[in-house]
Length: 192
Image (cartoon, rainbow, N blue to C red; front, side, top):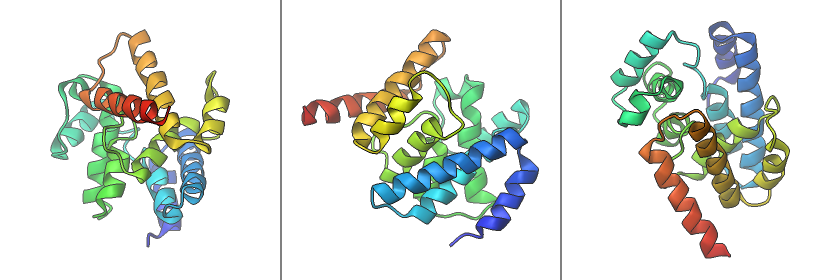
C-alpha cells in the first residue's frame, strides 16, 4: 500500500531525531490500536508515521502551507501556532505524498484538535499521539490502559485533558474541539 521504508528514510532526514522517534512510537501505537479495534493496521501505522510530517517547518512557512492547503481552518487555528502543523501536514500528505485516502488526510488534519464525527482511524491517530511510548505526563498510564478498553471513553478523557491544557495556557479552543467534546459527552452519557 505504501513504501514504509522509503517514508521512514524521508522522515528521518526531514525531522529531528526526537520527532522521528516520536513518529515511530505513534505509528507503533496506532498499529496496535487498529489491531485491537479491528481496523486496517497498515493504514493506521502509515497515518501515525506521517502525522507530524510538517511539525518542524519554520513558523512563517508553516502558516502559509496550512492556509495554502485549502483545508478550512477556524480563527482559533489560524491564531494558534501549535496547530498549524496538522493542517499543513494533511495538505502535504495529500499533495506531496499523493495520498488520496480522505481517512488518512483527516487523521493527520485532526490529530491535534479532534472533531465531531471522527472515523475510527482519526480516533486511533488522535489517541496514539497522546499515549505513545515517549509520552510521560501525569495521566498517561491511565489513558494507555483505557485506550484498550473503551475508545469513546478514551476520546472523552483525552479531550478533557487537551482542553484543560489549553485553558491553563489561556489559549483559544477551536470549534472543532468543542464539538468533539460535546459529541463524546453525549456518547458516554448514553452508555451510562
